[in-house]
Image (tube, rainbow, N blue to C red; front, side, top):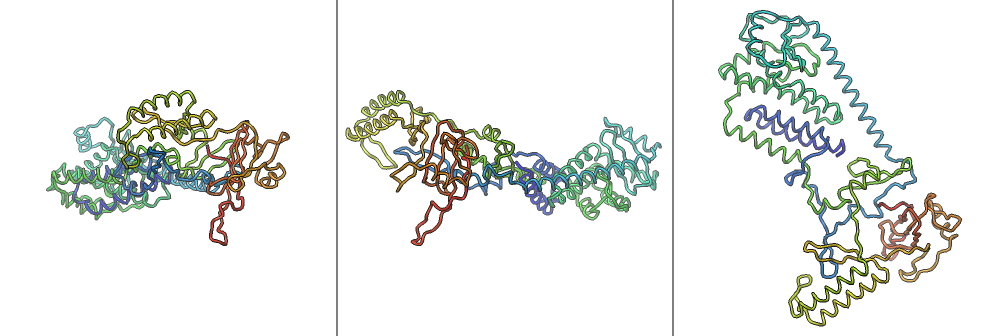
Length: 548
């Protein structure tokens, strides 16, 4: 999955969470949105997703298998997403043409680096400033720390550089209080320290670090910036909710007044720090006053929201098993290019894959061919099977018929013709059905070992094509001849060459050399004649290698 796909999928998830947040923020536990933002972060940073039939992306999957009929059998095949003759749009002799991709990658890297540097410098400066803070050691802080033990050592410090309480640090967290803190107002201090302790126990600093990483990676996506703002707000809302439930709903008003008194007035960014009163004060006040006890209905609603949103927006389209078997559909080749002697495929998701890696991931199915002896043995058994069903009822394409002796003889005669063709060198592929019976597929003429150059005349007659005419016709497109008269394409010995149309239809010239190493074909234009008919053998556009 490419970065753009991840970013787009993340944007869809962010949009969904933002809408849901606006509708039910005061009706469900605030942790609901922390879970949703966590799933969104996973969608943005993990380059794969779980497929689901309920995914919203399933609506955009349109490719279906095509059913073709071979004789009286139905065989499921798949039409390639791009026709064979059109798989490549860049000739292999042209230098890498994905210059735009390189520019985009460079711009993305620069943007990500700038964001990372800015946030790192800001945090470094804040940390340097916070190091000048002084530890607080009084009876209240000692009693509070002893009554709230956790595995990580907590420090309570005081600084004139902050105007509202905040927490920083992961392994050795520090609660930093303003210098103007009234240490005699124990009620307010209980609220503030309880709020900061929730941040510490939940490792919210790590959550904010992951948010910053997602922001740096997807800096170009405005939805990710929206997520960063809203997720930070929801972290604070969830802490407020926890504190109110800890001290009781009767403390909502006094806790809200504490929030107002502690309102931060100092401007600036403090990444990886958790502020007691940082932003969206009005939203926090409203959320505090509307905090209620959890009900079974609110918990069920929260669970449905998380499960439903994740299933619909955070999963990918489920590909049917039959479709997954199609390498062309899975691979989605858009174009190819050659660099440093290696062939690369550019897939439709923007990713680039070297030929060997592509063939390993999307292997070409191996084709088994009937041998004469194998088919002869099968035919002997089939003759007995056919005689045993004399008088039985069968069906072809939904139409019933009776197996008469004449019908059996016709079928055997057809099979014997195939047997003779196999003996003469015609290759028939074979597959095996679920019940173990062999099935016939279409025939292929075997290649000859002689070097031939032929021209089709009226689709029937053929004649030799002189070498000088060959060079005159194709010399400007990379075709040449060696001293033995063998065809070369860009210096490589040609095995097969087809001169057809831009749609891969038909062939005007055919060439085969069993000792060759590359297969090539022409791409021709298709034009409309004066009589309205389509001339599929127009001018040559280019000659390119076949995709294997």
